[in-house]
Image (cartoon, rainbow, N blue to C red):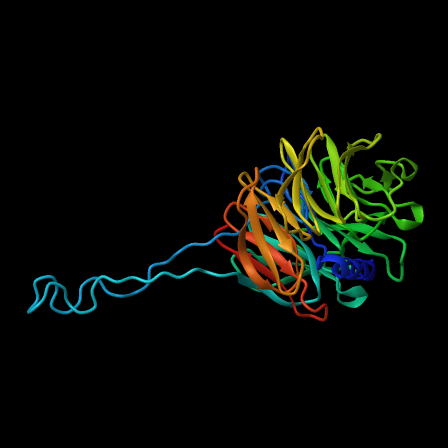
Length: 396
């Protein structure tokens, strides 16, 4: 499936230098967010993990920011205020400022595409093929990375309760994959549990009612779900009703509905009841579409051309930024997204629109993005041959 992703990204780049990315969420939610997410919350975005929200958006919530620190320079130089011959001593009361940049939490990764965050760790999916694909975690404050599981061409990740969930391809399969899970604690003695087959290795979202993602090509591409305890992938929307010919690279859930974008031009932004039913089209815009996030009033998404939003009930869409990307996350004040290019950037804009801010530039193909209360996290895919990284910027 990741080869499928690369092909799609190449097609998109020909038109507009874009790409795809996703993130997951955490907590017992009321809203969700997306990423390359999730769920994800699965990924991607929603509200900060652990404070509500199920989705990915690629991400779970916000990020970015700058701050100043005072440098050295002395308070009073030799001679002081009443020193010999002068009003001010040498050295004076000068200060300097500096702007902190992104911190690398993990380097040398095999093409990471999606991530999720909780109060202690960042989790991500390396899509690097059947031999190098994996699920990893690293402390949010930095430290050694931990291997949680192998995962062939993983493309979506999300958190819920005490587990991490991901979507990956079946070995040698080109038409379908599986959703698996393992405790967040991980460890070499823990064997991951396969919850369901019939999923593509695209972004996923997780909530109390189950895991949501893209159905297998062989079954007709649609949105499917599986219980958290495991079971067959069941169509939320029958393929015959949806007639979706491309997988979803953006998916999110709230307490009542599942939301997704279509990877086609024009992009369709859609929703359906969690327990199944006819889908509603919220927006139809120039695409293709990628990450999606949802809060109590609006749905937010990113295409290769723009960052946009629309009311939960539909209506006229608002363009928040005229540059697009792949991963998206939200918090209480801002929308955050990754511009999937090389070099690419991490950006934010107010929820209701306004001037956009570049939080980090010169990034190596940034993809999934999530936020917590203080920081923004994202993955750089790199060159696809092991130069990927997991990044953090504080404050947001």
